[in-house]
Image (tube, rainbow, N blue to C red):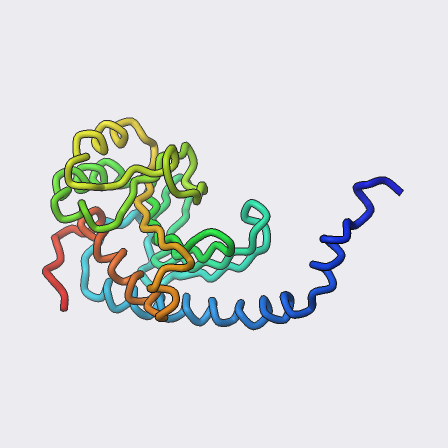
Length: 213
């Protein structure tokens, strides 16, 4: 038997650990419930807000997805709002990535991209210093966080953000939350999602929404 077909003692211990698998089975529906609460909060935040949306956009469309292999780690996510049609992408994704972090990400590509970029720069004062990052990878499906992957949207980086943004065929703004953050421990993920969407609304709203309590 080759070494590739033989389990190490450490691997056998993991496979035999029924507590882990029972815990995973119990946690998965809890994460789904968290995403459902985020969905409710996002619907509330978007109510009555006119958006610069692509043709065929359905404001009620959403999607829940669960998988096991995002770089070998389980994941669950919500897309709301959700629009993927041809080259057009207009979605706000809430990704719970086991072993990594939670991400709230606005992904934009195709129709309206020029307007979204202009809004980001022209309304930068409304967006900066709100725990948002511009994702730098050449694909919208990279979810890592940190140096080389993300650029913080701080108030003093407007010119740098504009330069990075200028020739990109899409862009993604994201808020990252560590799994050990008090937001997770205290069950405030839906509130954090609402705040993240509110922070990026100046990019996609036709008119700037007023302050919300």
